[in-house]
Amino acid sequence: MAIAEQTFYRWKKIYAGLEPSQARELKQLKEENTKLKRLVADLSPDKVMLQDVLGKKW
Image 1 (cartoon, rainbow, N blue to C red):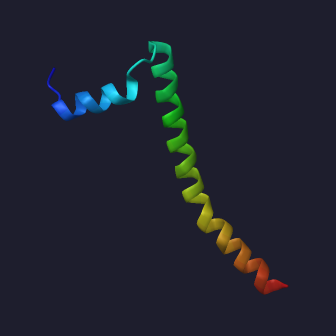
Image 2 (cartoon, rainbow, N blue to C red; image 1 turned 30 degrees about the vertical axis):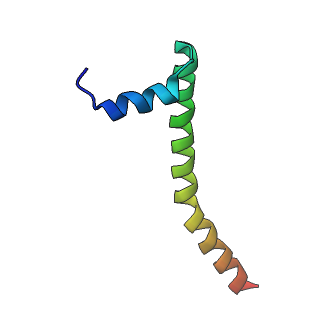
């Protein structure tokens, strides 16, 4: 299959017992979660900076 044996068993552990539609949904949810985590990481410094600016004005 041209994959490592460890990869096969990792996939088997994750996807064992799932229907194909469930596996697709799991993949989509993981991708969405990754996007949301990236968005939070991008916006967190902006929030801190704005709080600092607001705190100094008042």
